[in-house]
Amino acid sequence: MQDGTPWPGNNVRDHPGMIQVFLGQNGVRDLDGNDLPRLVYVSREKRPGFDHHKKAGAMNSLIRVSAIISNAPYILNVDCDHYINNSKALRESMCFMMDPTSGKKICYVQFPQRFDGIDRHDRYSNRNVVFFDINMKGLDGIQGPIYVGTGCVFRRQALYGYDAPAKKKSPMRTCNCWPRWCCMCCGSRKKTKKPKTDKKKSKSKDDTKQVYALENIERVEAIDNEKSSLMPQTKMEKKFGQSSVFIASSLMENGGVPKGASSASLLKEAIHVISCGYEDKTEWGKEVGWIYGSVTEDILTGFKMHCHGWRSVYCIPKRPAFKGSAPINLSDRLHQVLRWALGSVEILLSRHCPIWYGYGCGLKHLERFSYINSVVYPLTSIPLLAYCTLPAICLVTGRFIVPEISNYASILFMALFISIAVTSILEMQWGGVGIHDWWRNEQFWVIGGVSSHLFALFQGLLKVLAGVNTNFTVTSKAADDGEFSELYLFKWTTLLIPPMTLLIINIIGVIVGISDAISNGYDSWGPLFGRLFFAIWVILHLYPFLKGFMGKQNRLPTIIVVWSILLASIFSLLWVRINPFVAKGDIVLEVCGLDCD
Image (cartoon, rainbow, N blue to C red; front, side, top):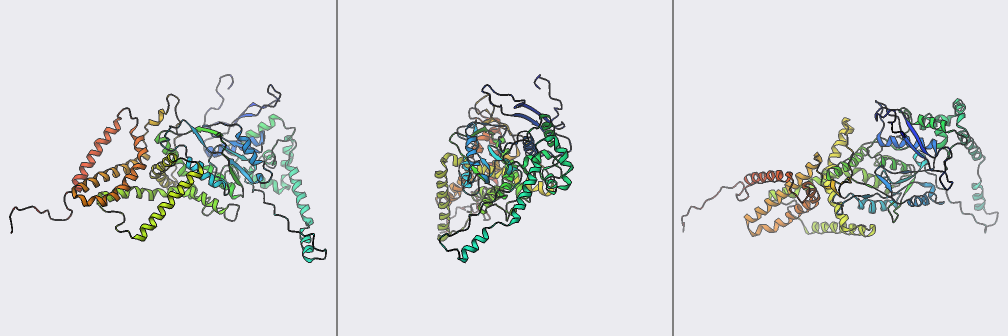
């Protein structure tokens, strides 16, 4: 607290709800006479035995508190490890939100993530430039980019689970040139007349809005006594919870709080909406706010908004809007990718899977394909693992993957290869991505695919089928005691085993293949190059992993000595087992020395 004493209830797992208003109370103004912005600290109630839903639950609590205290129509979401780098970027997001023609249908404006403290070579592809500068730009032309969890400006009404405003149909074509007796014109004029029932419906709708638009919070109890006669009030409480003040604020599209409300009554109601049991038997986390049920609640939340017919916008200002920190060493980076991939597997195996969820709503078909791509990519770890293993097997056994290839198949293979290369070049040219960043992305896609994606696939199946939950450690960020000091920090984890195994067997395959070609003569070098190319291609993709595993270059880590002895033993055992100088399955013939002629 301000006097240096600890805040009562400091147990992070068992404490009441706490709110402290630092700025923006009692009419305090700055030196220029302007009202100070509100700065409020919120700590929701925590009790043992309750599922608090981590970040998603915290964000939903903040939505309810802000709706009661300030009720601004727009919300900015920034993670704790990010900061505002360009304050004018918020005005750019408002240009989209307040656009008179299409702004009403925009649920959020997403900014790209930019990071500080990343090494010059970006060894582990922390910048994700291919995703942020190519994929997200492409989604902006469909229905909008996906929500990535930070650097995003929301429309409050979209977070409440409301449908996007329906597009007004253009008026029917009328003709003043035709005479009045024209049957077509008469028919069209009759159709344009509004029935009387519409006025009654609109009137009743306005009446309910007036009931909810409370002018004084002190009169909430009187409205609670009348809720038995109001069916809409009951439905709203089932959706948003037992808070008439919050229900009233949710119906104010332009924001604002009821006039004449006292600060004490506002804080009392704000404490109520962050209690542990407030969300019970409501639609919070199901249809309202941040959606529960996945580690990557950001993708799920944006998907639900797009299913309601909203669209999003991708805003890339010249100066980055927000900057943050990224895990810089290999172990933390793999754990971060594991968490993302596990969240995608959870969505894939849930009822919110974009393959079968949300048909007949406002989600466009191409947008659905993008969400399907964002949840099925961990499945590619299995064929990727086979692709990285086959070159070593071919070198050790002396057989190629394809025994024979026809001219037609070779033409088809070259056409596919050229089309992929041309597509990549066009994407890099359009997105402004350099070849170095693109190559780093390809390398870490292989490293993360055979480790984090593979583990996420099996852990996701265990979590859904057997109910086994996985605990994650928070990824550490770059330290301040030295530039890129954590880049060479080695943390052992099981995620390092699959890439290291693939690296070893491919290196062994290269050595065995070359030694076999040396022993068999000149004719064996031709077939060797085809097999050798794929093995070296795999090793080049795993090179950043090898470099990160070995640590700093100015000294020889102990781990290198251990692995050198281990590899030498493996080579010796393989030489004895394979023995490429002896023909397999044949009788060993010796020269007898006699001249039969």
